[in-house]
Length: 186
Image (cartoon, rainbow, N blue to C red; front, side, top):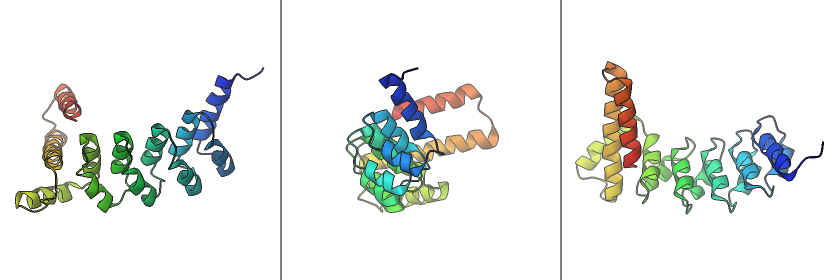
């Protein structure tokens, strides 16, 4: 049976996302004309670093977003992606565990609330509480109003979530409502 171009692209996407695909094939797929194929290569945890570096400059923001979300992406690449014009790319870079603390700190002042939330999501409860106390004591004047709002919201959310987890006092409908409110506020 002959393959249509659509079937070929679908098969290429499957191979591009498969962690058992060879490094050589991932390298080849990284230059595929279909952005969906390149996106799958960028998000594949088995993609070699040299291929990830090639995808760093891809014109398609979804390819860069998949790269920023890949935990195998080197910290230096994530630092560059933290400056991307797409807030989605910056958000994924901010929440990637490989992103360094100084880059996350810079992203606290991002104009986009989801990016700021992504940066705060990797802070431990203790570090976040310490930051809150420092800001409350007048430190960190360089933080924008948006950063301060995000810090307060993240602290409030974690306090609510901890209440739910520890006391199990809220029913699932209320937990869903808290999640909806948080999502809507971002």
